[in-house]
Length: 143
Image (cartoon, rainbow, N blue to C red; front, top):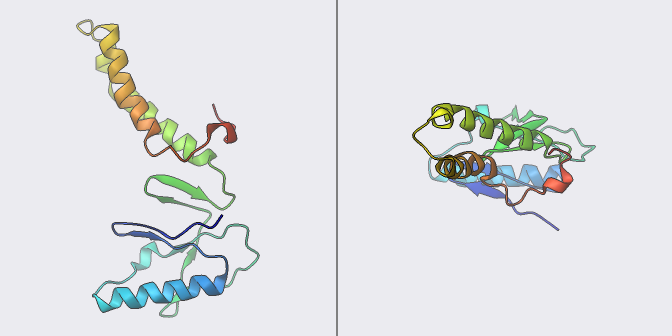
């Protein structure tokens, strides 16, 4: 299976099989961007190598992209091992934070248990599960 490049609004993730292919894609994007007056933000130039023995730099205008072990793209943490543990932990942390923000609701005597459960399901579980349709919990080892 081959994945295509990922782009959303002003975020772009280029995927390639080789260092040369990545350099060509980067050059093509930089050229197309320049035509319309855009550029690739220097602080956001990152490269994550997955299962690669090649450590040659990817450059724009003589400046290397920064090699990283992980980065976040559209709220999902991507790492060089292809693992989702960090991503799952981050989502659990967000759900916990959402739950703690609702402490006044949990302690309220005016709301029924049914209403509290509905609030929990929409606000806490919704936060934890957003964009998770592509994650497979049975493969994460985190429950």
